[in-house]
Image 1: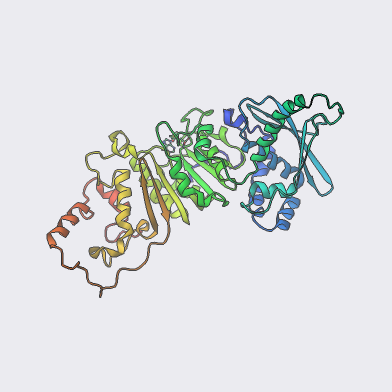
Image 2: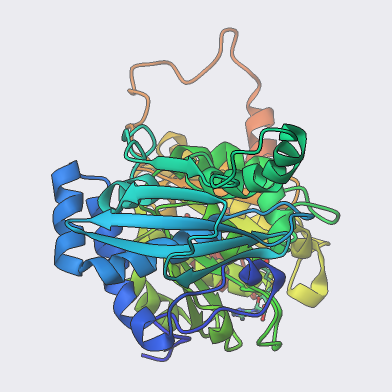
Length: 454
Ligand SMILES: C[S@@+](CC[C@H](N)C(=O)[O-])C[C@H]1O[C@@H](n2cnc3c(N)ncnc32)[C@H](O)[C@@H]1O
């Protein structure tokens, strides 16, 4: 075992602008205990209301309140020009009320325990109902125990200047909206999240977020486990993590893991776990998958070295759940020799894009006559779909076994096509002709040579 978990137990928020908006109410020790409790609550929120209530009871109200308030403020997207505006936020459980004051401002949201009788707005929920609103699936009829009261000016009976009260109410409305919007099951648009959290998945170099939304939307309401290779910021401990925070907000029920060759523990926070290690080390990757998987999503945005991309894919794809997605970013580097790319041999499976292209033939392994009787590789049997976009590919995991077209169906068009055309096609495929440096890539490909025991 060679990987070093940055921390399996979250420790501290980074001082980045994004983390400012989620200033924690908990110290390192309580965060450690929160990790297991969090996963229990995530799952219980998707069960029946009485199961959620039991999970809250067993975890202990004080810990659940801390987790829930942390989560809530991490989701808040504040108005840029909002002045500091306090909102009293009460959570009721059994016969106790747990009060916090949420201070909403243009810079973010922070929480302090205790009531504030001067706060202009009061919001309250049953604690287990709030847990369901935060972590339950959309449509779970959660958030219905909410009570609110505008307390601004409640002690005055002077009705001479209602307009000035209305003006003073505007920031209060905005602050309340910041808090309530954080409880909506639908996340903000992925491009907005990417910009907010400073990941380059949306502009000006790449335009990936619509592709991500197309493939990830079906999973965004699930308690997914995500692994992204490449946290960002390289050796700067205080930089990076933008994409991990984006996924945390997008997958409100998800556990997000990041792997980087540098220590990025400063980025750990509830539902985000960083791990340190090299993506070109298959033992490390298997070990991570054993400990934190199986994964629903793996994203490779790490070194972009073709050899590393292929190692990570062939090692981690088996650790994806059926129905899971494997994403490879920044395919432009498959054409750069400095990243081990193969610009002069576009079909070479040594280049990451060349390797991914072999998966298209792998999809049809049962239909290729000269493959009959040869055992397909793992990827040929388990990649169910391959989607290419400019600079990014999405692979879907599904059993790829439909059986070949029966032999009694004629193998020629009417009228028959000249044989010469087939010969030419086979020459382009070239999948039997790997030599030299291509040998290892060919062994990893969906077309392992005979005798390779994938
Ligand atoms: C492009 S950045 C990731 C950006 C991030 N995913 C985002 O969207 O905000 C690439 C990261 O990969 C890391 N990296 C480079 N080589 C690596 C390797 N061999 N294994 C793991 N991580 C690596 C770098 O340290 C860097 O932080």
